[in-house]
Length: 97
Image (cartoon, rainbow, N blue to C red):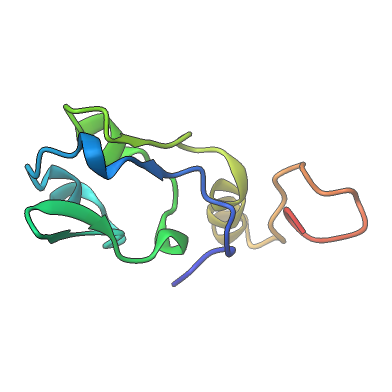
């Protein structure tokens, strides 16, 4: 399941990657894969901003504002059954619209 396109706070700097593969191991959404002995992003829009990748990257190659933004709004809407709301819309459109 994808969330909202082009809103994740995930940032990856391949030059800092040492190729340990920890991000691939801990990401619950399969955002990372190993290519040419370095991590690569498969689909950034799969990221739900849980922060597991950044917390486990010893080389500072990954950053993400975990638990913020539209991914958190989508998760909260799934839990509550209501519409997504991340409080960043202008009141006229949906979450981050």
